[in-house]
Length: 206
Length: 141
Image (cartoon, each protein chain N blue to C red):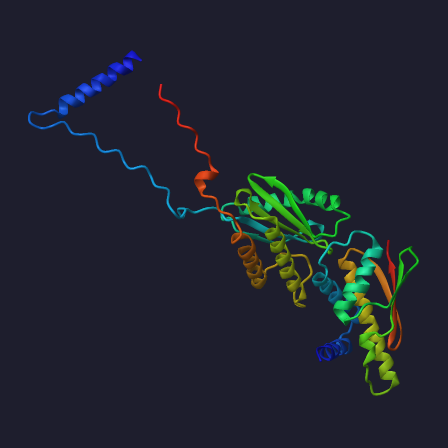
């Protein structure tokens, strides 16, 4: 402590020696900046999309479609969905007596929730959502129902092959994207980024 | 009016295709995807009831009139006014019999396809005395 004090006094001595000149008053410390006024509208910062991916898995766990909305994690999200299918199976079996297609939030991984829905025909639809986005479940249910209707329309095309390969139809992709945009992105409650990540309290100087 | 057009389309399809059963299978498989709004469980009776009520209504605007089962995997669906057989006009009785045979194969295919997509493998045969029709479904389990 003595050393630091010594250094500080040295610094002040040096600074005073350098700045003081005959006839020139010591510079006043700059006025403290005004306290930041919280903006009326939350600042527009790039925030992650509410929905990271929407997947359609066919029978025997064959992936039929993957709409990935997060540019960074394409392979990661695909793996996430495919590896979570056993949990979805468990949910489906647990709700064996239920008549509802929607299975709810199957699992939460890495700050992302995976919602699933399984149709009578054995098609599983999964939506990977950002856990912090706060999308109400009713919207996710509606989104997955829309995606299922898009898939049914795909099947209604007699030229669409039932081999089980990936769906390449741009119309299907557009329908699914529209469903996600309408149901999930617009419904997401976007908390400002500062409140999501709590700032650590400032450490007191020693 | 729309029903007439649909009947015409079905009639044409049935006449022109070489394998009516296979075509019907494809149709049924795809159609049931649009029909199912809820999960059905594994009970075959539930699935058959769905077929009789919702699928039939979706396709023909009416439900199956009678469903019988021996609870050992055999179901009989009876429709006393089968839509596709109710307005058949052909040149003579022979042509009519031939057309009806093709139509019934198509209808059996539709049922088989629908059941396949719902997870049940079955063999379907039909017996008709226009306009009444009965389908016999034997589950392969």
